[in-house]
Image 1: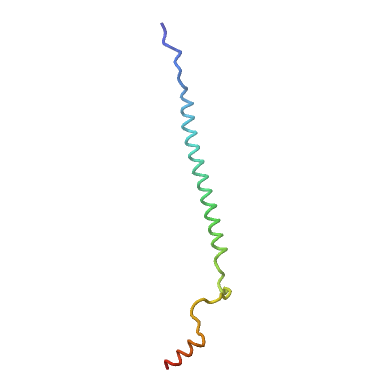
Image 2 (image 1 turned 135 degrees about the horizontal axis):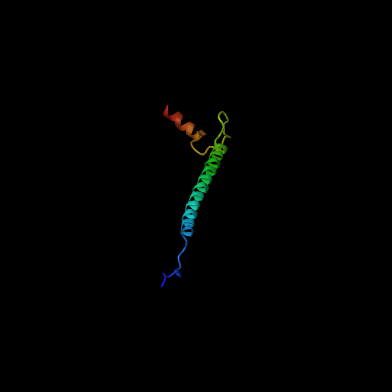
Length: 81
């Protein structure tokens, strides 16, 4: 008799195609990740530029909440001299 020709095998090009598809997906992921990182860097630098005060521009005076020299404190300082 002849050899068994009824064996089920996948052609070699199908398995190679799967390997190439995996490589292609990997490269797409790298390209997408690089693009996203670039966009994030540009967006972050623009956000930093928008929040950085300009040179020579003084911020609006805020109400002071620290030390205040009031009349009774001045009186105390006068007693020390």
